[in-house]
Amino acid sequence: TTYHVRAYATNSVNTSYGAEVDFTTAPTYTITAIADQTLTAVTAGYGAGTQETKTLSITRTGTGDLTSLATDLSGAGAGNFTITQPLVTTLNDGTSSTTFTVKANNGLAAGTYTATVTVSAINMTNVTFTVTQVVNAASGGGDSGGGSTPPPAPPILTNIKTQDERGLEGSLQQTGEAKIELASTATGQATITGNVLGQLSQLDKPLTIAGQGVSLQFAPNSLQLPQGTGQDNNDTVQIGAAAVTPQEQQAILAATPLGGSTGIFQVGGQVFNLTAQVNTTSGGATNTENVSTFSQPVAVTIDLSGLNLTDEQISGLSGARLEIDADGNVVPVFLGGRYDPVTQTITFYTDHFSLYTVLQKNGIVILNLTIGNTITKLNGEVKTIDVPPSLINNRTFVPLRFIGEALGASFDWDDKTKTVTFQSGAKKLALTVGQTIPGMDTPPTIVSGRTMVPLRYISETFGAHVMWFPASQSVSVVK
Image (cartoon, rainbow, N blue to C red):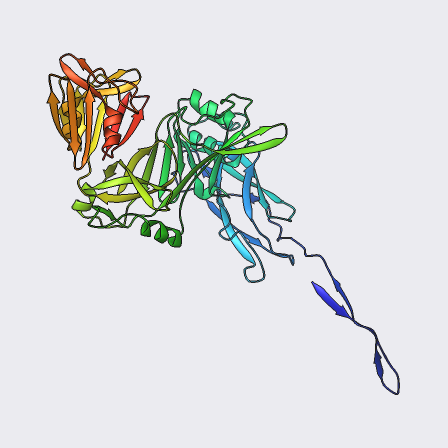
């Protein structure tokens, strides 16, 4: 605050004024103190959602603007509570207060649980208070003497470092599921250490990251850090899943080839930006790198509720990765997916992160097959082939007739030269048994009297996307 001061003197003749002096006081960054909170006691076995959700106010009392306002849980009992971030993260003269909530998790055993809540902002000294939840023993379940209640369940995760890991612990205790709700994070990203990733791997637990309108599920071991996932690894991975702004979405879709000429149509869903970064520390310096690939494809589930989709739209739905080419045009890569009419969601898989949405593609082809299995699926319909897909030199090989018909390509077999010629539209591809061509490291071969050809090479030549699932030795092809 700036003050303007000058002295004056008055006598019987007049009043004289001295020079004006200005001085400014430093801004102050403070909020009203928050008292310790004791939530309404519940009884063991209480119904989910019946425990008290406490709404607390943060009120600015200083003169400086409070920015990056955030809340956090700490202490031994932190994993037993859920806290939300402030509804407003900047407090100033126009907005002087905001609120957040805290509650105990579902399914706590009898006992007393306490955690420390910290409210922080840039330039402000942290404000802390405690929150306590008492869970009484159910009547008739304990000893008749009314002794002490049993202690809280032992922790599942150890050496927890971040708030998101405390949320993981709470989720594991309550439901057995390793899940982080991005709505409860301050940054909109989940931060997890290599130590905790290693523990999830040992527990064989998939990791779910739930955002607004989108959720991700990582298979065990699919997130690998450069230094591994040992107990001493405090390097972190940050995962984000959020919708782009309406302005960004409009620009992205405007650069996407949509309409009758392409057979690709928007269905009204959002565009999401999925991100994954690894932060490694060496010699006191932190290095941040984007995660380019995952050891197992990641399941992406997008909420389509409220769109009132027609049967025609649903039949052509596909997850789509939106890639930007050198000219700034958006190239959709179709990933297929399964639509759930009950939850009105679609789930598909991806092997790296970018921009994603759901589009309708007329005439989409989705092929699923497994190494060594003669049962395949083409657009959900079961198909049986006489020679199963096989791995040759770490490449998936399939009968030529099978893949040709699946991709809608015509093909001609020259028995004399042992050459098959595929054609789809103006694109033509000729392959000869025992011979490679540029870009191919393993040639077609004959197995059990059937000509076997490399699946990925042929599929990608004709504009299809191929995804390999190592854990199940299966492949999906989408065109």
